Each structure stands twice: as structure tokens, then as C-alpha cells.
Length: 125
Image 1 (cartoon, rainbow, N blue to C red):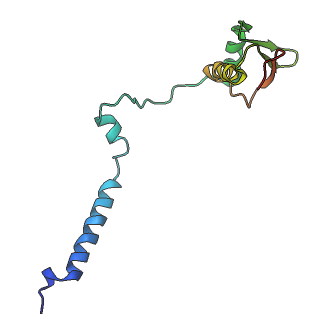
Image 2 (image 1 turned 180 degrees about the vertical axis):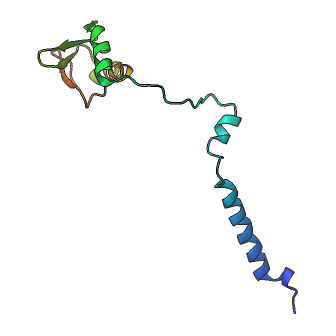
């Protein structure tokens, strides 16, 4: 008769025990951000800064308008409470993304404000 330490059941038991031990090691509390802090990576986890209200962001953005250059025009019409964007050069999608980036810089989500998109003749999506 084989000894228990050399049997297949014992080997399976040891492997299962190692897997469970490793799993509990990974799931222990207080280890959430240890890798990003110890690795010296360029990612810095900071607390969320106090955000301004959307009305303050909008009024701050409006003070920079109109934005008028050879590629696009961005204006605000207070009577309609809407923004007017005119893309003046091709590629339309490139300059549209550029204007969307300007809105994002001022924390103005495009789905929460009225934006009227247009283009000059010969320029389009």
C-alpha cells in the first residue's frame, strides 16, 4: 500500500491548497493601489478636485467666445441659449473633434448643451 504523502489524492489536495492560498493572498484588503504606488510609474492617483458647477463652467467658456479662425467658428447665442459651430475646412471630422476637445477642456459635455453644427459649402462629413 502506498503512503498517503505519495498518493494522487494528497498531490491534488496540495495543489488546491496552493491555489486557494494564492487567491486569498491576492484578495487581501489594503492591496488595491500597491502596484501603481510602488512601480514608480508616471500615473499619479490624486483625490478628485472640487469641481465647479456646470453653470460656472459654461459662463467661463462663454467669456472666451467667439473663437474665429480659418478652420472653424464657435459662437454663443444667449437668446436661444445655444452654441453655433461652423466648420470651414476639410477634413470636417478632424476639425469637429478639435472643437469637441475645446468643449471638453471647459467641462462642457456636448449632450448637456445645445450645439448647432454647420459647415461652409464644399465642406462636410
